[in-house]
Image 1 (cartoon, rainbow, N blue to C red):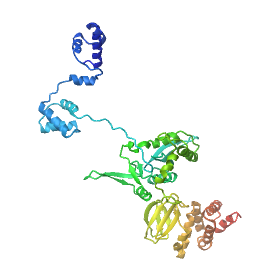
Image 2: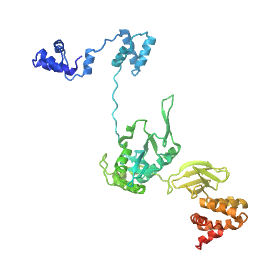
Image 3: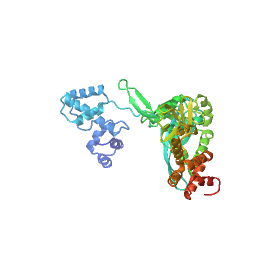
Image 4: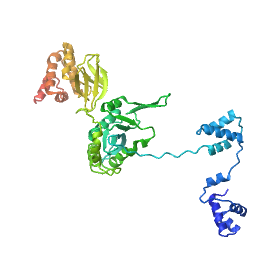
Length: 470
């Protein structure tokens, strides 16, 4: 079959008065076919596919009228029925024994034409309505050639386009919450609806109710508690529906292209310094391409509509519950924290960025989040119960001093073996008094100095403290 283009060439040649042999030499169409084409009516710009359909190219379908009627009725009932299912029903229910090609062709012609993909609809939010929150990851190369993989949080208000970016240790729930909290401090609060991706830091799973088909979203408990305490809501994007993020869906891409990959950094502190400079420029000096206005100008209008995060100087504390163990400790992550709550009592633990606070019956025990000795945090007011029994007091004091540093443990190991009968009465009280007077840092330095000179004894520690040498 000659293509539509070739047929047009033949028609133009005939109209120009060329003879049949000349036309055959130009188009390859023999005289008999030229006469047939001359009798056809071919609309201008008809495609080859349209021409094939019009001419009925291919072997004629061997389907009877009854079979065609069955296929048409099946597709009316279920327009998206798979063609293999149509063929199976023909053979099992209607005794069809013909080939599949004719069935496939008829289904293709009969099935309703699918509409193309729906257009992506961008939408704008009103003041205080929407913000987007995302995680990003990339490898940054510093000037000295070293590289480091960084994770970062990025957030942006939809109305004002005010933006915040901060580094995160990892893509975790706490990293997400800390990023949103820092953004809220910069903006003056969070909007009513916060668009988030479907990663486990925020959304654990989506479950469809079989009876109603309704989708229920299970949020990560800490993330849900944070939203509840701020008084705002999350709006997870549907899977594979990035357009739901609206006008700010390229937030992470923008942060990478406009800052992380557009600048050079000496080291990580230099990167963080430049990040603050860039955020100031982006938010307070540069007009946004989407709105034509400086984000800070629109943020002044949006700020009264935001929900403030009033968590105080310590910042938001992730909420946990714990039980005081028989040794009077509360375990959180890999550390132990002392408390005044009775053994066996359930307490509320708040994990802040730099502190851990244990709440119980109107009291609060405030600890550094990372203990100085890397193992546990023991507050001075909780020493009393550990010092009730004489032997218990001695061993508790020794353990506390040994836990100050590896050098402290090595010092006492030598001391116990060199003075097995006197270290309790003569050395330990002196070392403990030095600890109370000097603090952990200076006593650790004394341990290190004396251990290096094998000067093992409380008197050597005292001499080093007084500057007399050991």
